[in-house]
Length: 140
Image 1 (spheres, one colour):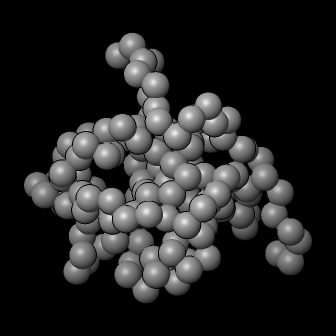
Image 2 (cartoon, rainbow, N blue to C red):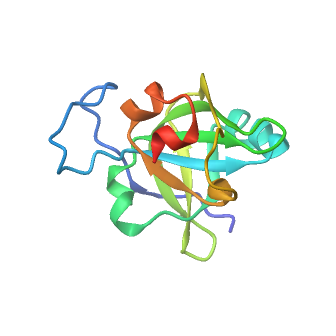
């Protein structure tokens, strides 16, 4: 618990702009995490990280960005940050995502007509798609 975290994944960056890929290639490089407003301000913005995140093993090496979805009353993705590294957190089934720089405001990408409860867990999208989206269904 008091040991310094060790990076288990560090995204390889060629540039901050994603490269267009054929439709058959999985271009999801962005993790979307839900957060209540207090936790978002204290940790996502204040500590430049997010922890206790469940991430599918196959997605770990692909994650280059993290986007924060603020729950009610905001109900929107409002910030995104580049990922410096991902380390194990707690019991080993969760991770801590450490940012390489502070999160920057985007959008907002509003909840829109997404299915009720859709943002109760983490989701994946591409950075390019995130920047173009107006509502959550645009990311699906």
